[in-house]
Length: 203
Image (cartoon, rainbow, N blue to C red; front, side, top):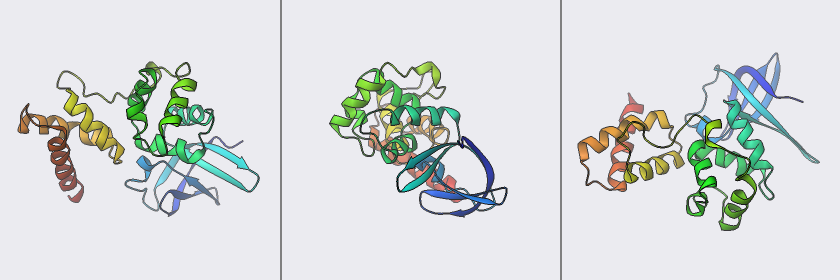
């Protein structure tokens, strides 16, 4: 069973990379947060992988962190959750925020995730609530050390759902809150971060 790959990216498509490992090319599907921006050809990747076997296909799903792989496996254990939905959740949701939504039974948050309707959200809560815990995951979707607010938390959730990475937007959220003042709403803060993030990516 293949569980780990280390190799060089030789081709990139919308949702997968072709990884050269010792002269063998492995097609590995990656979550959206690893494809935005996509790895450059020639880059070396180290991936924890899950092999999915079906009657008509063999597919590899790759993850940068072992924790991502573990969460993927737990998601796949939920009835009705296929690889596409599981990889979609991994690629768009901050893990600690997702786990918090399971523990707190936040159906409204879960239904914002790709491929998750109300019934699926209910199944996720029912089948995962006893299988996940926050200490297992070190990332926290809340802004640390004081400046957090409901507006900032909602803005962060929205930005993560767009594919931005938390380390990329957290400093911008704090800066935006300081510049716009305490009366700004979620949309004001999101617009500020998107504009600032766009400038940073063009440099």
